[in-house]
Length: 249
Image (cartoon, rainbow, N blue to C red):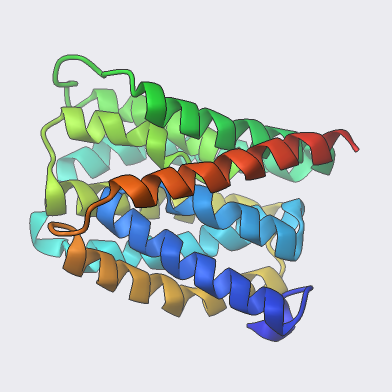
């Protein structure tokens, strides 16, 4: 992976370490991994390449979580999610290919700050959403994810409100995200924003994502999350502010 990272071996080690922490976090909480990994990828590759690389790496990581929780999946939720997600993810991918890099950088910064605010405020979804509502959840998630990398923290409340817990929640959300990432990759490839080098970089990160998913599965019922989450939110806040400033440069 070192040769694929602009900063050389040190940057490769940083990306690998952050990828391991991100995939472990995502395997425990069901979300947050992309928001943690994205700043490291932007620093190593630049904003234009970071989102496609993240998509490839997340595809591998989510695929591992699907496998580790395969006996607890709710495929009906995934089906309705995919119905709304696929066309909007394709549209978002096309818009991503045409957006100026400075605007994307500011959007990424704003997104990271909103993720932290969402986690702090955590608005409730309310009553259990009907199954068909996941088509709307998929549409919004697919569009925003294609532009910003991932929107796991915004998806999570709907899956939880539906009554999915532990392995069923982790696996079902992961399988829905796999569908979303496949649609995004199709759009990125069709608009020439996923060159072979970015594909290889994402695949190089993949084994680390699988390892993190395995670790997270082993500790999902035992690991105290509070301090870890606070540290992660601190990193996301600093990165979000930095991207907002950088986007104005």
